[in-house]
Length: 88
Image (tube, rainbow, N blue to C red; front, top):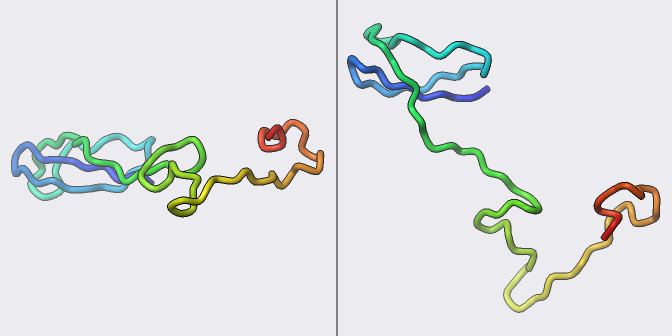
């Protein structure tokens, strides 16, 4: 379930709430009943894997000076002719 961050206009308190994406946004502060607004905060979401570049995930090399080697896909026996990995 996503975590949303809100800030109260009256008391300036910043708080987080777990809500479903389908839930309506909060309209009042749980402390002082003042109006709140949703705050844009830094996400902890990180993409990993082939094709996504982030620190430590873009390199196919295992160590300094070693060269990257192609691996044989598990479906290379011909059973997965439409699989993108088999086209290697």
